[in-house]
Image (cartoon, rainbow, N blue to C red; front, side):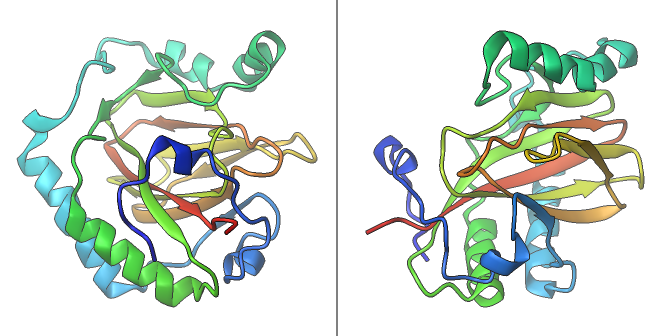
Amino acid sequence: MDTRNIDRAALKAPSARVTGSNLDTLVPEYFASLELTEEEALINALDDAKQWLHRHREKLDGSNYDPAKSEAEILERVAPDALQNIQDVEGDRFVALDDQNQLKFNTLSLRPLTQEVARTLSNFLEPTRRMRLFQSGRNWYPPRGYMGWHTNSNVQGFRLYCSHAEEPSASFFRYQDPESLKIETLWDEEGWNFRCFRTDLKPLWHCVYSETDRISFGYGLQFPIE
């Protein structure tokens, strides 16, 4: 698996629709939760990274976090009506930009974790063609944290998010099914949650909300067309 730094040209490159990996059945349409909680080495690496962040919280970028933002205002930003308004006005929105309330740590590489994610995914997905793995979205949602509706559809491939919630049913990942247009809300279990979705078919609109500390390590997966 290629885990080197991916330049902008590579991110814009096409990714194979049929991946030649277990993702073809694990994510048959647009979205799926992955069963990775029994991968002990991965869980240990995630726990180590999470504990490091707790010890070095001063290194996180807090420029997009306002602890005084009201719960009502935040819930309005992740509501279906907000999505409809964005679709009507903007058409597509690749990233949430200022429509968020969270701490970020995109500049921290945490390389041992990325190496373990790559090893675990190689065994779990059994790819038969080259697979690129790159960091994509590293977010700490404190209470009243959120990320507004967006699609990530400017980069082909898949997104995997490994998210840790301190409490059960106190944070969620919400998305709109591209076919039925139904809004699905997936409340986090306590501990680690693993969710994967495609960005190379129809746009999958999604957002995040949290009433507890929720730390998310995001990765992009591409299967380059050689």
